[in-house]
Length: 156
Picture 1 (cartoon, rainbow, N blue to C red):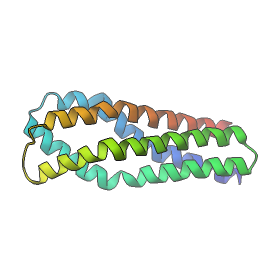
Picture 2: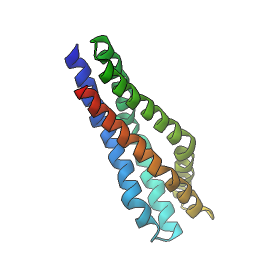
Picture 3: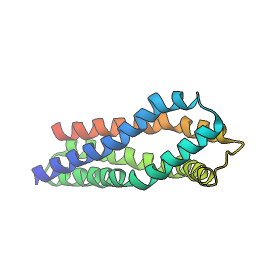
């Protein structure tokens, strides 16, 4: 059962790491790059990035959340309270990330996808991107701390 707990934590680390890496890239690189393009390019690029991201990224995201919860429960079951707590913290951080994504990022994504589909540039394209950018650093931090907590769960 200890091996199952550790496997769940490893699966959570790998899955969450995919989302963390994506969010970190967006925070560190994408924001600055997009500041240098015109609004129509911003709309076309980000509408299409979100189209594919919103289709493909839920899989590692959901696997990470479920695996973190599983790691927490299994660690508790085998008498590893510190490991359970660390994985539990990761699970809670990931739930907060999901809420931020669903409430702030996803609605912006849908608007940019619709504009890209219509080959239109919204008058507020820059504002939409600025609102999306404002939440990407907290999202990346939540994911990064969750990965760290999952790592701690392996050694606790």
